[in-house]
Length: 167
Image (cartoon, rainbow, N blue to C red; front, side, top):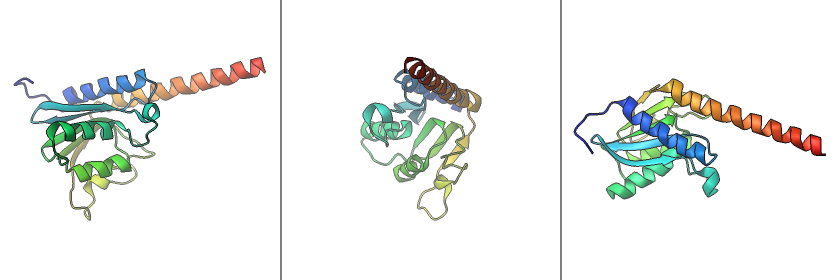
């Protein structure tokens, strides 16, 4: 890539761009990137609806691509940047991948498993704990998801209104 040492905000902006890709296909706008030694290894964005795959979260897509790119199912020198706090499935994946560090933007009070409802990545009984940083570009990350669901609710309301009008 280049010799410039990028900060967490730089990489989170790339994850936000991936979230835009998800939104562009009407998926929940969550994006992720995997970085190793200041180099972008892989990217991912939510594709659960598109692929009819409940595991196709941004983190899962990015981690799978990183494993393939690095030819290793373990990612001990990598950092995952993701726009939304990982759910329990994704937090478990991160522990199994032995990722070194996790950075996320917005917290998720309903399913977040890195401090909101539980903290899987730092659970003392698991054989790997992950260093993590939360709140990087949190307002931008949170706003992207809020705007998406606000728009979806308005679309559903308009559709219901149209059906009543026709029926």
